[in-house]
Length: 249
Image (cartoon, rainbow, N blue to C red; front, side):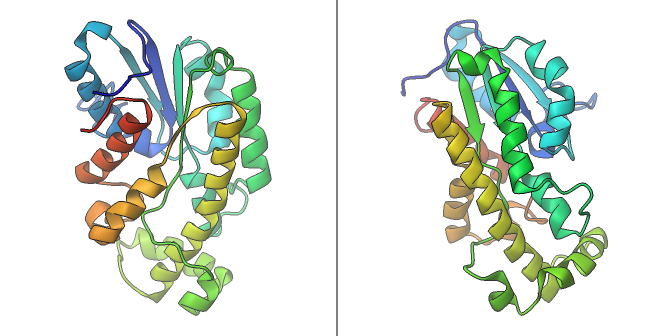
C-alpha cells in the first residue's frame, strides 16, 4: 500500500472537460460520472474507508481553459476543496485541428489563463494541487506534415466533417491525429511547467496511454482517440492513483 496524500475527511474536486464529466450531469450516471473519477472514488473508498474522502466531479464536456475560467468561482472556489485536480486541454487543441480558430485556445493563452486560475485558488496555495496531462490516444511523430503527406490546412478543412460522419479510418483522419498529438504535446509541456512551478502532483496521463498503445492499438482504448471506454478510463485512474500514493491497483 502506498503513502496516500489525502487526509481524513478531505474534499477532492475534479474539474475538466468531457473525460472528467463522463455523464456526471445525467440522472443515470450522476453525480460522479462513469469514467475515471468514479473509478478513483470507488478504489479510494474501498482501500481507505476510514478516511471518508469527499469526491466532487465538476467536469463539463466540451470545456476549454476559457470555460473553466468562466465557472472557476462557482465550481472551484465556492466548493472550498482541500485538494484540486485539473485536467484540461483536449478541446483547446481540438478546435485548432477542426479549423475552429475563433474557439481555439492558443498555447500562450492556455498557459496564462491556467496560471491565473491557480494563483487564486486556496487549495493551490496550501500545496494540494494535482495536474493531469491532457492527452490524445495517438502515437507521437516528429513531423506530422512529412509523416502524413497532408498539411494542417488540409486537415482543418476535412477532419471535423469526417469525424462527424463517424468515419474512423482514412488518410486525413490519420494526419489529423498526428497533428493533434504534436500540438497536445506542447500543451502537456505547459502542464509540466505549472506542476513544477506550483509543486503540484503530476499525473502522466499521456505517458500512461503511450504505454497502453505499445500493447494495443489506439482504437482499443478509444474509437475516436479521445473518449475512452472503461478500460481507457481505468488507464487514467491507475495513473492518477499511482501519482497520489495509492500504490498499485
